[in-house]
Length: 108
Image (cartoon, rainbow, N blue to C red; front, side, top):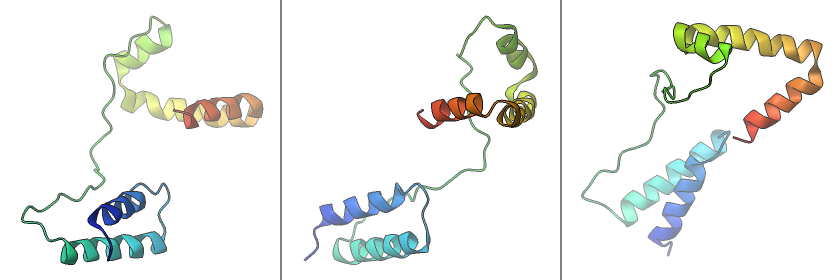
């Protein structure tokens, strides 16, 4: 028999999948169904979901650069398209620097 702990771990693994595919979704549905029938709970567990709400920007970040001050003044929603355009240009004119920036972002 499958233990509840094993099911919980399998469910967490599927939910933590970085790029889930159809196979991952089928496994997750199976694990959740099995858990529901083998180990029923009186309390409904909330299902985590994505939100369409805007990202929360860390307002506590402080830097004394002109760039940081301007972004704080105009807001991240207006600054982000400019930054995105800059990074796209950087990829074209200096690929090594672009890759360095992307590596730093991927390591966060």
